[in-house]
Image (cartoon, rainbow, N blue to C red; front, side):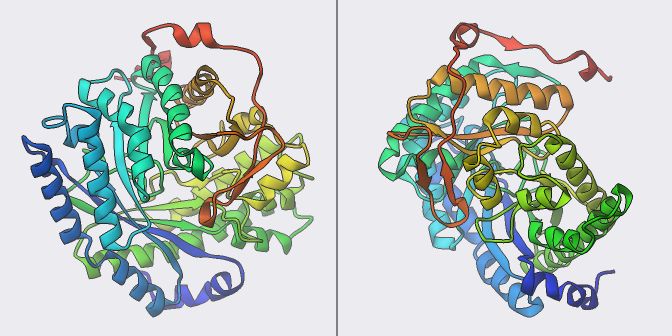
Length: 454
């Protein structure tokens, strides 16, 4: 049982250390919305979303007031649109109509993002999958709250390199279509490997086909809390350090469990998972990079960074699974550059490069996240970066992702301002050496040998 005394115990975390419930995300299945015409499908999508999620924002606000826990975002994730639209969409324009319907529903519901403009192409693309993927640049340029994702590989299936090649081109086109807003469309587009069905975090959220008709998932974040508690043990040994992080993660997760169960009860929607992710914000003191510095690094990127991040990620997960039987999603430490003041400082100091970030993604949640690169970066180079991250995920049986932003007109050393939780980012350099010949090859990279466990 969880009671209010456990929340009171974390009161200081909330008031002084940036603890919050980052998101309550309602996942909604749209499988029963598929019709033979685009208009009928869109009408059913809009009707179902506005019916099931009509009280989501109000309920999140009420829970925040009742329990004194800030609920920052209320979001919706939906069944991958490539599946929902497969029976009626015959052009990229048809899929864009679905995107605009999702955007209209999100606006009317008051949620800040809606995910699920997605395709799952781990082993190959259907005609509908390819149409949706090719529609992404126009869809993200024409909407404000829609998030898109494409899963290009998995440990069980390998990596669809045709999809990887296409996604390099799509990222470039999306950057160009939104160049008047610093290519912000790319901040709402993520390419994944081993995507989980129950991820509440944008931009990679979608409602998996293994899920029920509707579900409540909660994402909790608390890098400021972990950083604060580590300041109290500056010279502790590793055992004490690990135990402290684990106990702190336990308390944070219990707050999320309370909020999730309460939201489930009030909305009449089953509870799914808690995602305990140390997801930073641009706010001072709410940084994963600062935790790494407290562990003992001058800057993230220094020797020892990958080890420190592995330690942090593991203890966060251990504390989380002790606190809730249903921890899922992308639980662990996120390292988005633009959203973390400490990461930005490390890039500007010359301590952190794309290559070092890639090494760090081997041991933490997700992957290369919110990284701005020069607008001149080629589609093939972007595809190569996606392939590298997908390979890390495939071989290590973990979720990895790329959210990269080739900012039109920007060069290395300049910066870009996205605003809000997306923050701002220094433009980072990428390798000047080509991978075009490799990316031009057709087919897929096969699954690794250790994937065969039947």
